[in-house]
Image 1: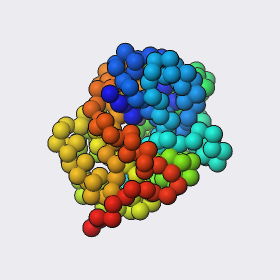
Image 2 (image 1 turned 90 degrees about the horizontal axis):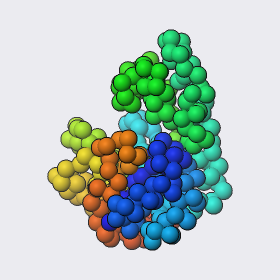
Image 3 (image 1 turned 120 degrees about the vertical axis):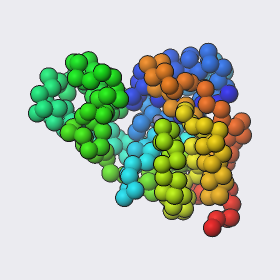
Length: 288
Ligand SMILES: [Zn+2]
């Protein structure tokens, strides 16, 4: 069993890297990719634990990007975590995450929320800070029922405390991941709650992204039905992308995403490995 999309306390997950590996062992996983937001800091502490459990660990990352079509998350696999330019980019993005969290807290305070940036920093505990940490702090002071309620009321796009993310285009993210020896994969390409909302948009997006170096498409994801899996796998094939997948596990507090519960084809890891590196490899020419 494989899970190629997971988070730890290095970003907005609630399990430490060794705890995540221990959970993966219990779940019967043989291969695990850790894909924290804008950081690879979990990889080293997870590696020792993975070795002890006989689990193959893949160094991953998840980068938040945006363009005129909206926000897209791009996963990177097999990145060289020692690559200095890549780490410098991640550091720049994380610095912006901090500035953003401060701006969000300022807006919430202006709206009357008894919240300080230190409350949020305490929750992120030195990891890459994100809106889910602010959301948990809002739940803590009784301003939201749960994390999704906090996004609905304050933090989501168009809401009073919404602040944009670091501006990184999908093409820039693909280039950075490839330069660090990895392969970029478009994460959750369609919303699980409403997968057929805009199939045309995804289709028109994938051609330019594949040209920009995208190597894979997350076809298997928490909440996707078999029909969605098939549709996305056909799209992946059409654009010469490796069909990939994972649960997006953040910890036991989010019961919908279960570690290892999304079935991912066994050959995915080898195909991703073959597609990794500075030059997009193994891409069939057949594209309309
Ligand atoms: Zn994720």
